[in-house]
Amino acid sequence: MAETILQVEDLSVSFEKNGQRDMLVQNVSFQIEKNQCLGIVGESGSGKSITCKAILGLLRPPFHVTGKVSFLGRDLLLAEDTTLRKVRGSEIAMILQHPMTAFDPLEPIGKQMTESITLHKGISEKEALILSAASLEKLNIHQPMEVIQKYPHQVSGGMLQRVMIAIALVMEPAVIIADEPTTAVDAVNVATVVELFESLKKMRKTALVFVSHDLNVVARLSDQLVVMNEGSIVERGQVEEVLHHPQHPKAQQLVETRQALVNQFYRYVKRR
Image (cartoon, rainbow, N blue to C red; front, side, top):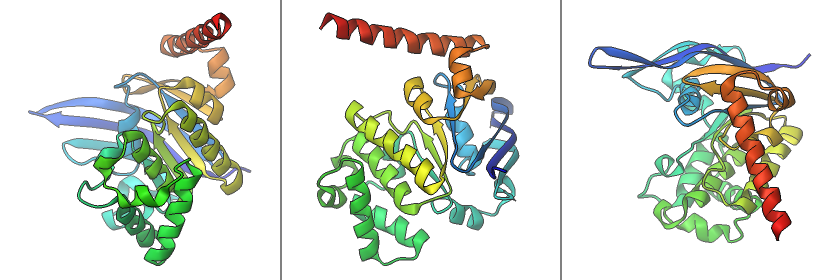
């Protein structure tokens, strides 16, 4: 029997301002097993990123989070900050949509990588540096030592996104929550990133929560697919089922847009 590693039950997030409480996420529930990828798709503002941050306890007042997030039997919403800090990175890694916000602009990239790795894995700085460079090379960063010596503002957003993925690879967490990890990455490197995630599923049995607006990437990686709209899950199912037989209008719209882009690509190729 497959082991459920992360279970989210009735997760809701509200935002309070001037005595008014706005619901951002409502009663979101899903579960994910080892060696499985759950894809989350939806338009901007549908609640995808807020859901991911709520799972790891990254939201502070005026946000208010309710529900249950069970990770290997522990409810993360009830966990102390010290417990959450141990879980983040080493057991559940999150790749943020906007990588620039995840890095200290005053510290070299390499120092930030090694600090995170030594903290969670208990290895020396030299060992962490070697692992960091090797992980960057897997992501088509061919001169990793140069990147390691630079500051965040000296590299592109796509490069920083790959650095975040590289850190997650070194950590070897049980779960990776990837929030739009390919947004700033060029087409050639998107393929590399997807292949690495596929390898993590197969070789390390890593569970993935993959958030993206790119239905083609999600379809390639995911086993299960959920569609979010206005803070709620409006459709869920096996990825092939949702792609070929969408029921909710928002799911139908996403699938139709994907097919239109595919058709446009084939017309372009044919003209050439």
